[in-house]
Amino acid sequence: MPLDPAQYERLEQTAAHIRARCGAAPETAVVLGSGLGDFADHLHEAIATPYAELPNWPPSTVVGHSGRLVIGSLGTKRVAALAGRPHFYEGHDLSTVVFPIRVMARLGVKQLILTNAAGGINTRFAQGALMIIDDHINLLGSNPLIGSNDDRLGARFPDMSEVYSWRMRRIAHEAAAATGVSVTHGVYVAAHGPSYETPAEIRFFRSIGADAVGMSTVPEAIAARHMGVEVLGISCITNMAAGALPGPLNHEEVMETAQRVRGSFIALLEGIVARL
Image (cartoon, rainbow, N blue to C red; front, side, top):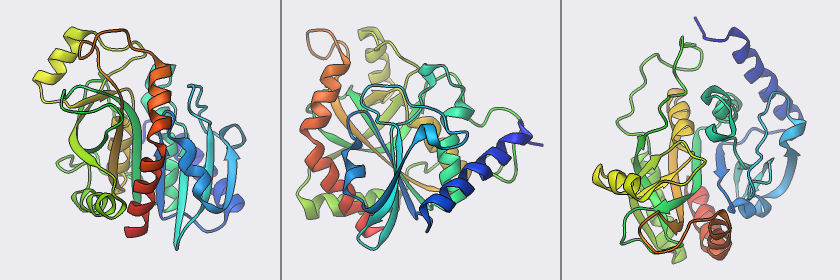
């Protein structure tokens, strides 16, 4: 039995609204992290809908998240760009955080690209580096699948041995080489936030194998795999994590770095989508 029988109905209601408004369903969805929303403006013949106009859709209130769903074309591909996402630290439960991802899956999306702004734990990373996520560590203290399972969404115990698709990571490498964009690889750890991590926490994360830290992505990846959607994750290393460099952390630095690398980021995403 599902945890909330009405949730499936809300998913279907939202998906039906988007179908009626936007026509042909997207094959690929891209979630755009803080300061990375410009990709949505590169879709052709696009229909943009503010989140506030979508039934049941949770708001995105964080600076750098415009809060709109844009569905259009990129070459021959139909793409949905989610410019902004809800976060656990905003007070949402994880079922709400992953609601947009579940709607995308109900629309028929087969591939999901999750992007985020992250703090660099690996000291070899440069500020502005683009990191392909090979795996993640969930330190949110919760999981979006907790509660009774709805078999219409996926299996009770979904496999997580390859959350981030090897096929899509290979495609990302091909796109990076073709566009001249430098990429690196690493493990992403999700922390609750909204406070930035302490230097001691960063040392702990480094000791358990994390290369970058952020406050999103992991719940979405879990929910997507639960529903059989193939996932690629990309982190923009917008700042070095606490203790790596002198000085305090702030969100303005995150936004400035994301804006600086937006050309490379958009070129990489366009190359990936073209190859899917």
